[in-house]
Length: 253
Image 1 (cartoon, rainbow, N blue to C red):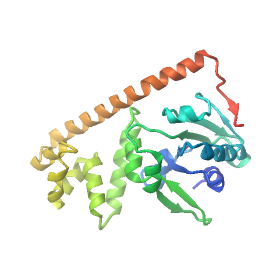
Image 2 (cartoon, rainbow, N blue to C red; image 1 turned 45 degrees about the vertical axis):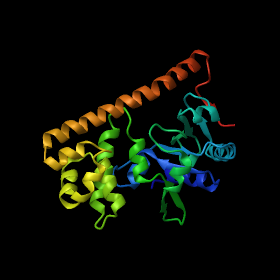
Image 3 (cartoon, rainbow, N blue to C red; image 1 turned 90 degrees about the vertical axis):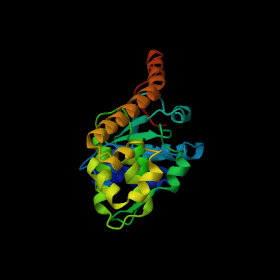
């Protein structure tokens, strides 16, 4: 992990902030991306935890660089709050904070399912679990859908003796037809129980490859539209803040 990224994460961890790494850097650590400069965090938006984060951000000489303001109410409504670090050891690093995400469980559940990675320096990085990261990536952004596919492909390739939980996760979330057909051959007993949760599994059973591709496309379009509807009122709220001349950039106090 690059030193600027490590500086951001170690500073936040060192202040005992309850936060989980997600976004591009989590994808790197799960083996599905090569590089990400931004630090995306899921945050417990309690009064105490937000104050701990403020201290960490001050240590990083961070400034808010976009709307909305750094206030608890905006986190609870689902907004992301964006910062840039000016500390010499983390110069230019972007830090994006969220607390509520569409289709993703509350933070307390994310924390219970988190993945912990030990660093070379003896510290640790707390990340959202892979299934939770996949849920968070189901957005309207073009770049997120190939990433979901790569995340699951990397996980599938790395597991020689998968648990039942992992098999079900692949069956419900994989976007790679080859993987789905392989699972159908190797674990046919699980397909039947999951069809109600993911109808395209019925097409897997019949070997309808064209139908599977169309169903995957339909799934993606439905999630993109749901994400667009979710963000529409939030975007309107940001526009209203701009009309009221809220400051775009400010130091963290």
